[in-house]
Image (cartoon, rainbow, N blue to C red; front, top):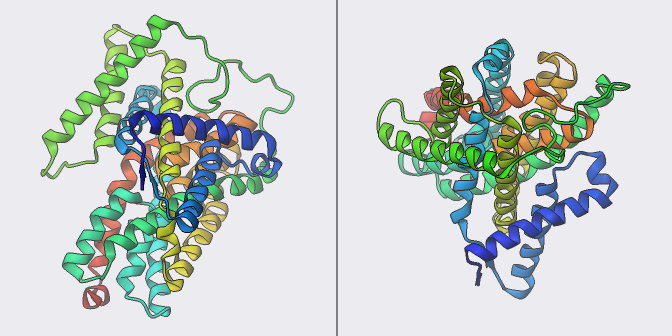
Length: 403
């Protein structure tokens, strides 16, 4: 086994991002189907490491200590970019999108349970390979995997949860772009014949140049650091209470309060373009490390019925995004970007959703409403909705009997 330290992992992540950019720039298929650069580079490296393990019996492991700070920094920048005026403007759309997302949770679990039963599996395994791990991700999957194993007697529940979440992370980054390409043909390219603003707002076009000074960058870095520290302290304070939330949600909440509090007091105006630069760097490095660290051999070890179940879930996500998310959200360009984002966190995680949307908006133009709504729903509301939906399913008599 080859264990890379902190610095080697940072070097590897940077090279993965450069590799991803090189691949997308030179392979028309990746550009045509809007595959995010971190996904292209990260998956290729993960496949190479899989081959190295299979044929040379060498396993490469990366230092995981960077992942959490990078993810938290990304969510801090999401909060710092969210002003109350924008949140108010997107209130109705946010509510509708939350209903769409909750509907997917219900459908994911219904299909998972039905397919598991049809394939001769414990129906609880269908629930575990449903919204628990797909919309929930690795963290939610690991937490519920322990519950399913200890309280319901599901064998290897934790291993199945991690493998299912890994499968979802991979597919979530791959299907969002093709879904967007299909839908963009229906609405056309926005802003044709119009001049796009040179300095976009927020995260929509990460490759655009932004005017930044050293001192203003330090100011923004300080705001991100305060959000991380205060969010971590808040998370520690509410642990074990009815208000317990994931750390990244607390960090995002502090970012929102900090940005709007400073603005209302007239003390400081957040430099949004700078915040987005820090956020994009954190997001790209986080995804690069997450994807190149994937243990794809866990997927290879999945039994055929589980592979069929997860493949069906991926197909369901694509169809749901096309026929439900896109239509309900208005059948316009914003709905296209929202559908691509929904594929990201409906199968994987919110950072994957943002990467999917960036791959679309970098090519076709910004969608501020999508970048406002998806992070709020994907980082905060979906965890609450998912917990409620999972508990309602576990309350069903035939599932209780199965456990």
